[in-house]
Amino acid sequence: MRIARHLGVTVDYILDENAPYPPPAKDILDNLGDETQEEARNRTVDVSTREERILEGLRKLDFERKLLLEAVLQGHRDDVRFAVFLLGGGKNLPGFSKEEKKTLQARFDKATR
Picture (cartoon, one colour):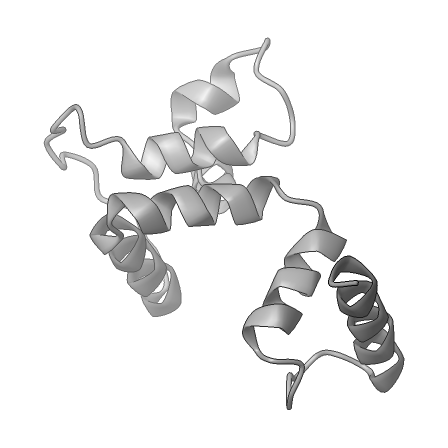
């Protein structure tokens, strides 16, 4: 159960020998955000305060934000960083080196020519 919690999947997923590893991001989102079925919360699991806040935040996302999160999780790392660069206007972004900012700016300039 602890492994399932860390992967963000159900215990059934862990026990399924045919399930891919690591679990696809879409499966994780489906398990966390499936609103078509109302499940009783009959399990108690030890989670950290941070994990609890993350789960509550995921439950509160509207449909559009869930789609955005799904796209981010499925997107290539470089494409996601480029999108963050664009959304941040290329300014004061922690975690971006000067070289990476130059590379991303050049990518933006090339795309807008």
